[in-house]
Length: 168
Image (tube, rainbow, N blue to C red):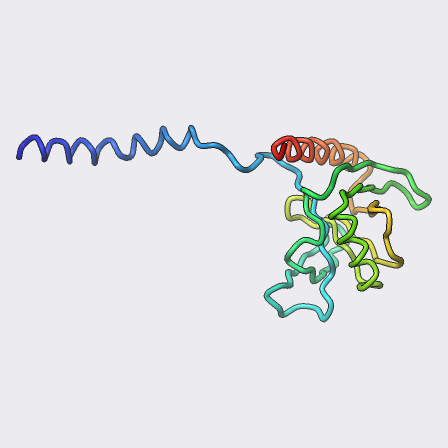
């Protein structure tokens, strides 16, 4: 009986230590310090639904209701570029076939609604859907400075590369 009680005591004392050491050896399924891009569709009918999240743009303070489920997620974005257009600097997202199809369907059936760019859950830009987007290339302006945009593009590319490499 003494041996049994010693084993129980030893196992009680060792359990916390084992949980600490095994936690370090787990395979990680998330990428730390990731800049995760997602495109969310503005919700029709506004707030009040479980499927609608309220987001506030960081600079303008505009509040938008967006569909909680992303229209296009990070697995459907294959590239991002910083481009100069007539109105200033913008981000250009190139989508894979699945993302392009989703964006096209949304741009046809939700004309006039906005697509909000969220990076790691923070809204940084929005674009109104004024015409069907057929080529899988999405342009948007942001509320960030040009210098911040340059760093953001590098961070987004790094995250996308790591995500796509993990899937292979």
